[in-house]
Structures are given as C-alpha cells and as structure tokens.
Image 1 (cartoon, helix red, strand yellow):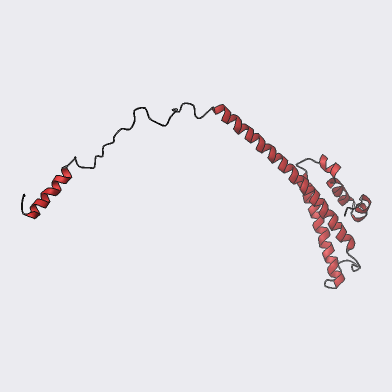
Image 2 (image 1 turned 180 degrees about the horizontal axis):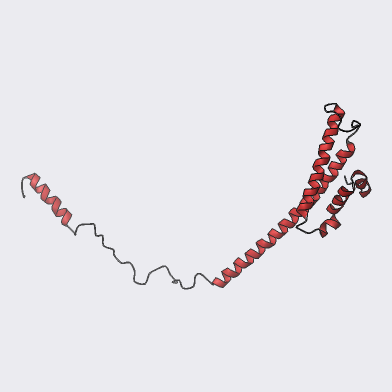
Length: 170
C-alpha cells in the first residue's frame, strides 16, 4: 500500500523526511552513483533505530520492560509505520543501486566482448599456412628400435641351449 507524502511528513521528522524524499523517483534519478551507498547507510541507520524503538515500546506494552521515558508507551503503531516507511525507502534505493551496478557491468561485458572479437579478427584465419590434406609429403619412415637384438640372433641363441639339453645336434 502506498503512503501519501502528507502521511510521510506526519510520521517522520525533518531529517528522515528529507532522506525518504531523496529515495522517491524524481529525486532518486538525480542522485549520483557514488552517493547511493551513503543514502542507503543513512536510511538503514534510521530504520534500525525506529525498529528498536518500536520493539522497546511493544515490550513496555506487554509489561516485559520498564518504561524508558517519563510516561509508559501506550501504543507503538506510529513507530511501526515509521520503520516500515524507512524500510520501503531502503528497498527502493537498494534496488536502484543494484540496477545501476548491473547496467555498468553489462556495459563492461559488452565492451570486453567487442574487444575480444576485434582481436580475433585481427589475428586472421588460423587455418592459413596449414596443409590442405592430412597426409605427409614423403609418407611414413621406419624408426629402428635400438634395444632389440639383430635379426635372428635371439632365435639362434635359443636353439643352442635346446641342443645342449637334448644331447647334441640331430
């Protein structure tokens, strides 16, 4: 439910009214990007204070806490509404801050992608300079294995041992 400006001014003090007014859209659009985190911090401080006062008043109403002022609290609806107004202002400003941050990140991503594309195009076609087919010019060449014995030497050695065991040549 929206709250009228007149109701806001009745619930908030002068400083809070100014902060909440800055959180509405015509003024929020004019805010600088660097000023938004400060505005969020100020609004959160005021919201937290109003929330704490409302909780204290509610405890006084239930009889769980001693009255903090000269008169005990009789109702906490005003401070509850004040905390809700300030919470809505924090939400508005945070959403705008996030929107602006995402827009900046999107712009950086797009510029990075364009720069990468330009570098890729400047590098040229990677297929240039490669052979047109996968076959080599001279074909396969044998690679001799140096660890194997010369052809037939292993077989001859084995025959000699078998002949000794068998009693001699046949």
